[in-house]
Length: 368
Image 1: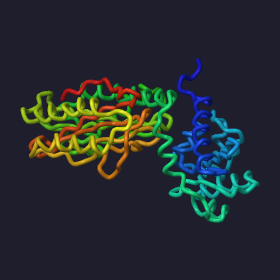
Image 2: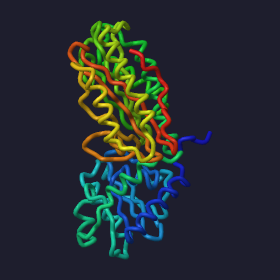
Image 3: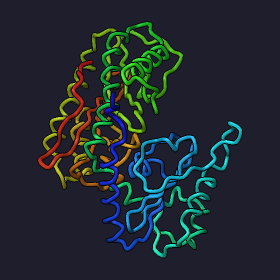
Image 4: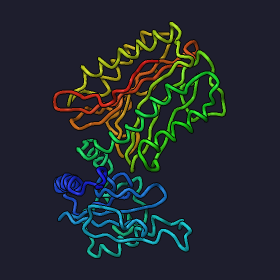
């Protein structure tokens, strides 16, 4: 049977064309990509966190990709593929980036005058090779990654299949007396079973009577709230959404009131978001709305994009001044926290921005 989630070569080539248009506008002859997320966006190659692939695209659209030698059989959209020695006698080499960069430099015999690179992960070897005169294209790559193509949305939806299954199972097992580690282990097993393969990431919040964090060797107690802010990695794509469960199934009056206040945020999000709308303005509206729920507090971001990283643009956060764009895939995660809630509630939905507004893509129950 064909793999419905195999790398879509045509879609990768379309993304390459989008980058080429930006290169032409910026007058760049060559772009070097060293972030794993950018390389996967451009070519479809996902190799995991232990390795250091590198890719280059020139003004003619020729894509050169250097992968660990054991990954050369991957399905990728590249015109020239080469391998570097990532292991010696089965031992991982320490100098992964140096090894891959050396192979790329040997291939790129013709030097370019106008070069773009991702500064935070470019490294001194490539900077030295191009005279230290490399323009920073990292903001451009973050911007290009925001617009999700149909193949990317398909992968994100598949990652969310694991979340749906995990939340359904959590509602069956979260009872007084269960250990947080047991919840973590069972949810991990559910996600693996649903996807039918190893996860490329698993996180993030599994604690009871807490704002969040990794599971502890601790028994969950009657009356507490458990914030399950869950995410998996499916072939390098991430999921991220949250539900909160009342241990024992009977939330207190205060817990139910806080839950209702949080639920009222989502109609505001859905009526406000459209291409061109301000993410900061939406954050401020929600902050003002939830501030009226004192003494309960809302004191974190409202959400963020998801894709090749668990957090990317757009940022629903006062530290950024993003605007929503068609094709954005983002979370909205209002919360309220206080000791008398034991210790708080966070609910998180996922949306895709369309030409007319937004579409919610998380349809699992919100109830406590």
